[in-house]
Image (cartoon, rainbow, N blue to C red):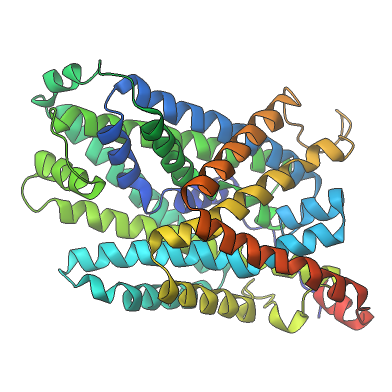
Length: 442
């Protein structure tokens, strides 16, 4: 049976997917951490502007590659076309065993922590609640792409409304004005503090590239992809910067010990005692949207691999009516639940972020290897080439280096799993694939 991916995602649905996935567990915690550690308005805005600029540079490259190869799979397809099937296979191996279960597990743990905070639950319940949340949202994703797209739109709108209410309340909180001025000029942050802020900001932007996996389902990719990618990143940048300013404005010179304490202090200052639960509820909605977006996009990589004959088609078994791949989703969810049981939140981040970022940079660098399309072709061309890819690769090198130094053991664990994919690729790519398997995956 032929697999046909229908073009159902227009500009607003694609933009909503980016906002829903990117603005997750860090929607309040990361701005709180920036305001708490950097303090100075100029440094806070500078870090967000820098990360937004570098992310836009990467988005321009991904928009060009996505419109040139409007197929399911994103980075897998870009690597296959630029560097060959073996490199692409290792990327798919990494996606299956490291990236997709890693980010699913991290979001599940983040969601569990805030759900338990809402009901005064014990921290010992985090693994169980995280696993239940992952399974529940995966079941929702298997209802079909229409249901997932609807959830993404509603959660994106809910996030933006919650942020708008918070910012408006902060602006009307006049008591914070003088204190905000007093905190505008503070000593420059230490290098360790600045590095922590950059790592946190990058994590807060993570996930925008997953739209590339959905290129085959994007309506008018040449127009939609660049608008959704760049527009989504700009929206997220403005939101994070505004929330950070709200924290600086309201904290009145206080120095909370943790980011969670800063969020609680902001809620109490703006909305009264107990309002920290309102912010926690907003985070639950935000993380649920992010997790739904990850579960929707991940199987597209395995579909692309099955089409190339390097992934068992039975593990994809794509449902053409609902546009979902139940077996692939079950594998992703099972591995994510295993990670939840084996590691804490920071260990999970160290496991999947460095190798994910490495392959993100490698797949984006395909734009340097492949001949560029003609200016009059039906492909979006990133402006100011090669500046965008150069800026983005600088970001990739910095982030991988920082994680390798900060979380060496977790980084090595993720790298070791990826390295195992190299010998496996020699076995898989040497084995001829029956023609009927390739046809059934196409």
